[in-house]
Picture 1: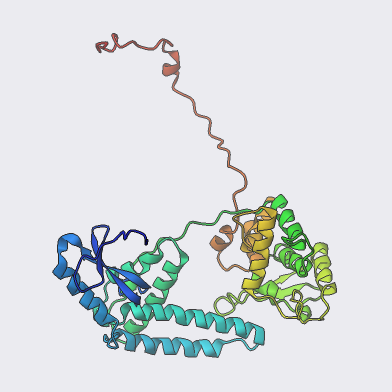
Picture 2: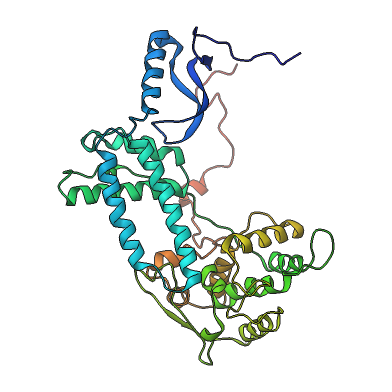
Amino acid sequence: MGRHRKTALALALSRIYVRHKKYAYFAKQPLINPKTGRATRWHVLCSVEEGELRARIALDALLKRQSPGHGTGNFVRAFNLWKTNVLRKRDLDAPKDPVRLKIWQRGTKTLLSVYGVIEKAFGDFDLEQIRPTDIALFVDQWEGRRSAGAYRGHMSKFFAWCCRTDLLEVNPAREVEVAKPPARDVYITDDQYVAIRNALLVGKDGKPTRSGAMVQCYMDLPYLLYQRGTEIRLLRRDQVTDEGIAFKPSKTERSSAKQVMVPLSEDAKAVLARAQSLGKVRSLYVVHTEHGQPYTAGGIASLFKRACARAGVTGVTLKDIRAKAATDAKERGYGEAQIQVALAHTDLKTTRGYLRGRNLPVSELMMELPKEILAEPANIPTAKRLGRKRK
C-alpha cells in the first residue's frame, strides 16, 4: 500500500495543489521561475484566499513564459549585444600561457552561466519596465551570499552600458543595496596546521598517500610566501631566482597590476628543494601532480578537505592559510603596511580583512562613581520608606 498523499488536488483538470494555504503548480518537468531565474517543479501561483480563477490566470502566464515566445522584451537583444562586447574584450585579454588560459576559459564558462540566469529572469522585460524592485527581488534569492553582490554587479555594469549608449536614462541596479556576507574570522592554529599536514601523508585506510608529500609543500608555500593559491599552483621553477620570486597576482593583473618580489627564507628554500626532489617526472612547475601538471583548484582543495576530516579539523579551507600567515606576521611585529605589500594588496582595508583577532582586547578604562554616592548609607530602602504598600 502506498503512502498517504499529503497534498490534495485542489483544481480539476490541472496540476494545481494546495500547499501551505497557497495554490501551487507542480510541473512535469522543471520550469524557469520568472522571478528568481531558477528551474524548479513547484511554482506558487497565489494564496487560496485569492481564489481559483486567480490561480489559473497565474498558471497561464507562467506557461506562456516557458513557450518559444520567451524573451519577447527588448532586454535580451540589448543584453546579448553587451555580452558580446564583454566576451570580445575578454578574449583579447586572455593569457597566452596554456595552463592559465585553461583557467581563464573555465572562468568564461562560469560567466556565461551567470549571464544565462540573468537572461532567463528578465527575458520578457523591456528595458524601460525594469525597476529597482525587480532587481532586488532577483538578487534576494542569494541573500547573505557573495553571489548576490556578483549578480547585482553584472547587472549594474549592463545598465551603465545602456545609459552610455542612450538605451536608458538611469541605472536601476544602482539603487539596489546588497548586504555583504559575514566577514570570515577563522584562524588555523599551529596545532591544527600540524595535524592537517600529518594527515596528508596517511589515507583513511591507514596507508601512505601518493600525493601527500607534494601537497604538504603546497600547503607550506602560501604560508611562507603569503600568495594566493593560484600563484602557488602555477609557480614555475624558472620563476625562482637567488633574489627571490617575483609574483604578479593573476587576480589583479588586469586591474591594479600589483607586483611583489618575495625574498626566500631558509624555510622557503627548504620547501622548494623538497618539492623539486619529489615525483618521478621533472616538471616545469614547483608543485605538480604525478604527471607533471599543476593541480587544479578543485583537486588540491579536495585533498586538503579529506586531510582535514582525517585530522578532525573542521571549518577551515586552504584560503585560511594565507590569513594565518598575515595574522602571524602581525603578531611578530610587522606593520599593516608591510603586510599589505607582501599580500600585493592595493587597499589597506583588504589587508585588514586577512588579519584575524586572536586576542580579546582589554579595556584600559577604570571608572569611579561620584563620591556623594559612595558616602550614602549601605542599607537598602524598604518598601515602606519608598511609600509603597507591602502585599
